[in-house]
Image (tube, rainbow, N blue to C red; front, side, top):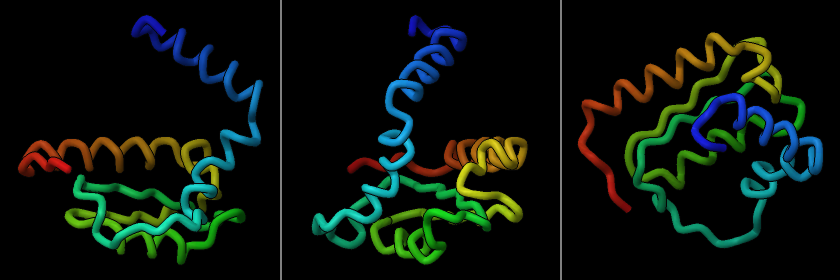
Length: 112
């Protein structure tokens, strides 16, 4: 990808064209996995963005993720957004991510 956004876009597009179903199912497979997870396993700060109108995954799944986060966890439900919230509300998504990252600069470093 050579650090160039254009190459990244091409790579993502090619990968999506080759296997769109597997890319879109990956997060739900992780969430629905039967693998045993110990509670409070993730120690890094976590921001989870969720579309209010997600037709594929239930909001309860997002809320259940909190059980696996040891430290800072923030869940933002984005009003009017579907499962594809980054396309539905890109400005809101970008602002939430940027704010979360900037806030993290003031937190101590988390190590697993």
